[in-house]
Length: 134
Image 1 (cartoon, helix red, strand yellow):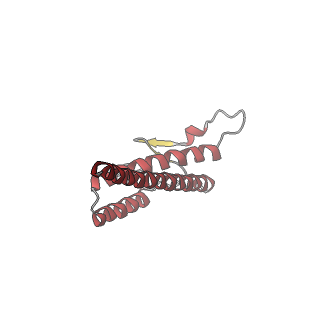
Image 2: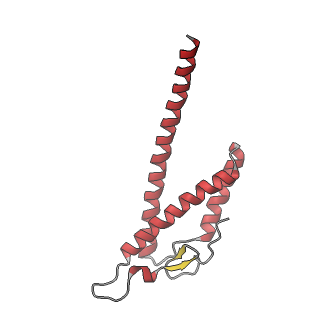
Image 3: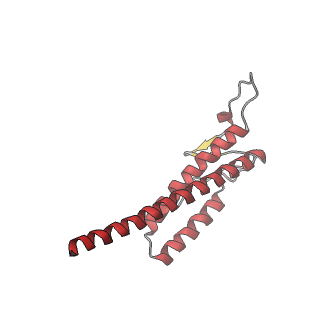
């Protein structure tokens, strides 16, 4: 019947979306794992977590891709900011783990984090001071 055929077609499309959603989740997981490794590297080498120039380059590249693909720039910027915030959170965790205070020390790992508007400036360089993501 025509109704059954339409329902089957709708289900096939939904199945495609489900597979794409799984792919997105796997890609996000891989990206965030790499962000953690970057956080470990930054902790080992005393590099600020927030690198404004790098973030701006990533965002601009994604916005250009959004335009090329006909995606809404506001949507892509919101999506990328959410990914960036989670990446920063994971890098902070890696930093704190890599810089745990010595037993009996009064210092805490979080005291080594320079907070500025919700973004961390970790490490010896001063590149992490700008927090505006747009």
